[in-house]
Image 1: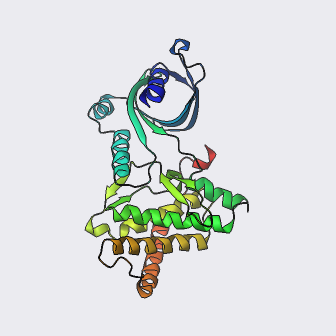
Image 2: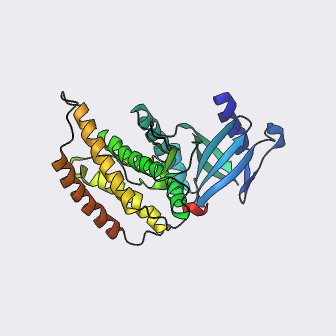
Image 3: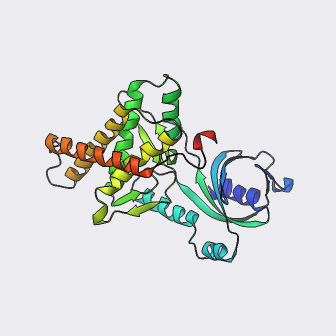
Length: 291
């Protein structure tokens, strides 16, 4: 893996001068077939796709301008260092996360950068999926339901590990498989920088925040999910939470208590709605659907 992809990343970005959205590379590096496509640039950070023969890699870059930023990079305290460590930790716990391959250092336009190298996951982001539902009727209702179920189950799996994601927005989640009538849909996490441990005071607030985040971002870009899909994701979260808790007990076949489910659904739904309102204007600084 390193000889095929990471060495090429070093050669390309280590010798690159980024001019606008295109890198100018040293032709002697043997990477004439490599292509760079930038998706996003904001506040000293960029994300793009590096395509070379035999590999597709996502590169996230963070500029380290100034003494403090360089010191943070030196001691491994940048956002990208945290994402690299958290991604590997989530993978070790069996959570569906896009692998982080390496952290690199490079000079881009003469500025020191930290670079995070990740596999390119195949499939649309959950936000793209919601946009397709809004803009056309080509996605069947059953596929929408399966993806909504998967979204709820993902929240339950994360919380069951004693974790929560403070930035659990749909653009940070990828739909790796929409499933079929026999197979459930599956999702993957593509940005793990804001994962934290669930403290006793956050047992209820953590899943509420994650579920609300999946409403806030799409609302801000005009693709708010249908009420039925939001309800379905909540029900899937409760169902998966119950079964994950049951598996840890001796009686793993216990059916979910419907009274508990109905009461929990009402409490969560009210709390999610309140959090969405408290958030205020959901319009993002950079529209991820426009990149």
